[in-house]
Length: 88
Image 1 (cartoon, rainbow, N blue to C red):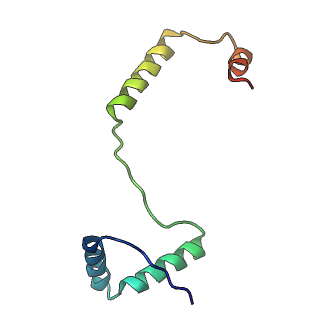
Image 2 (cartoon, one colour; image 1 turned 90 degrees about the horizontal axis):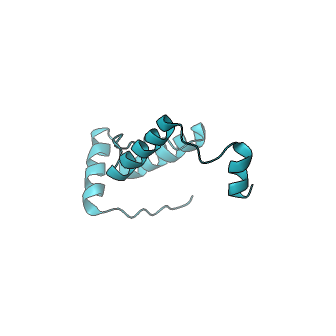
Image 3 (cartoon, one colour; image 1 turned 120 degrees about the vertical axis):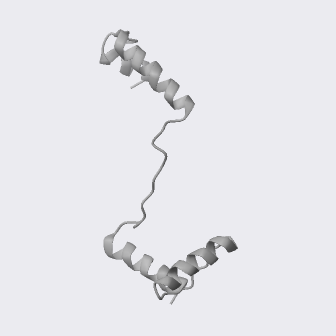
């Protein structure tokens, strides 16, 4: 048997413990179940999410790219020129 130590702030641990208890589990059981699921499914069973709205900088870059694409303004005459500029 191995021991795993996880550092987490007190509030997070307390809230996670309360949720686990609602299911009749303790945090150690939840952690073991997480590891077993990870091994069984050969993936990390988490759902990551993000804000789909781009930041102001990203929105600006996307707008610039759209303007360039619509203007049909090209930096390179063909793919060979592009690859040459990249040293490929």
